[in-house]
Image (cartoon, rainbow, N blue to C red):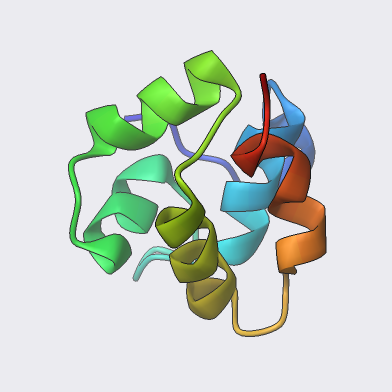
Length: 83
């Protein structure tokens, strides 16, 4: 499992924003696995979004809600409407 102590370790901007949004896991790290658990989805789904550099509109809203103000819909906009 990839564990990130800093969001600067993310490979792409979308990856970084998801890590900013996710609260730390019990060990204090931010992981895609924990983000998936918080959202009730499989981690492979999030990795697919990162690979495609695109997220579904409803999931963008969930990421913002999970982030509790750490990320905004404006920041995710280009990933929702990516071509």
